[in-house]
Length: 190
Length: 360
Figure 1: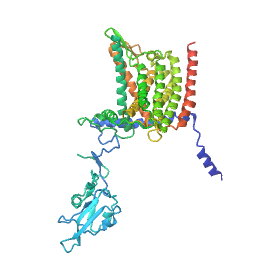
Figure 2 (figure 1 turned 60 degrees about the vertical axis):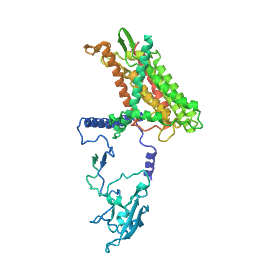
Figure 3 (figure 1 turned 90 degrees about the vertical axis):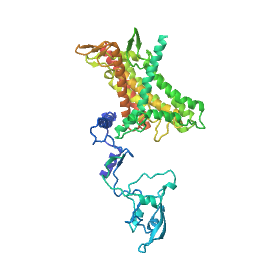
Figure 4 (figure 1 turned 180 degrees about the vertical axis):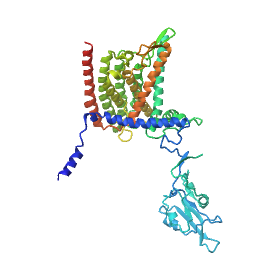
């Protein structure tokens, strides 16, 4: 029974600080040393950068978006695109699976007959309201035709009006997949 | 006539140095904190595509502050609300007047003291100006018509008054050592050598006094870790009801006080404009080696020395400001009244006893 009591006493009364520690001075000096070391190391690196040296070392963790971007992971869910058949028409068969599963209800599909009798339907219109989209990726997972994907790596699709945030079928079809390279690597954008 | 021109020139030069330091300090604060935290800091303001390491940001900030809406809350006293930032900034600015930027400059037959005014109670003048500055903060809290601002003002005044006592008591030891309260004379006496090789700077006579004075001086500037009057992130400070350039003036007051305090530490404890071994006619090294330099070059070297020392201490104050978290209010008061005040009085007693022994 004595051990828990000891532990409680230690909690209430931690090891008594020595006089030198209670003056705050040693810990203050340690703290100043740490921050000053960061200051001078980064200053030195920046000065060397100005002289064109040490380019592989970074003086700051900051990524200067949008001049610099990091390579995104392939599983990043970015702006949607509609995939195409060999002839350029959308692979979508307007089965409404994505519209049904969408938790934000931001997909609006109007189905119509497809001229090819082997294909059930095609979308007359396919709108995604990005102002509502929560980028959960359910539409991609539920699609039986692999007709919708979120691999464009486009993230800057902000617009000035709500209407512009609605992407129609033509804009979605024109999005291209982004090749994944150097995940996490910082590269300059021209 | 010439006297007036010289006096106006000295005031202009002193204000030029002070205000430029304040302006660059707003930039330095952002850049230095960025470097300490592995960030980049302000680098976007540009003129014709040149960013110049973000040095245009102080100008951009000033333009922003001036053009913003100047809002006075409904319950506020309009006249006092407007007056408060002027009082705060005015007393911060004038306290720089007694800090010597250099020794006498001899130009064309007349000697000009590189100091706006050499009061024989220079140190007391600085303290008086700082104490009067507290009225600005109290008035700001009082006239805002906001109880939280008033509480912030009360915190500010009680903190500043508590630490002014320590500042005053630590300087007593220094005045005893050098036997003067005039800052120019004090700096001149720090030009003598200690033990034949050390520059006779105040810090070597009063190391404890230096530590206490620097700590209390940081508390006087009301910046972290002593930023309880403002507490910009959570507790509400005395300038909550201020906007636009009036708010900017309070910010400027803080930076001005930082520069003035750094200047005071340099003047009192680090020999002011004294460059080690540099006498009015050139270098006098301990080994009796003498390198003579023209008086004008000596004056320039003195001013540069002072400015470099000032910059170093501004850097140190920023380093402290961006390293330590804020004190709790009871810790602040305990540090001020139970640790620093007794120590500073002890410092006075020990200094007095030693002086009595040495000069017997």
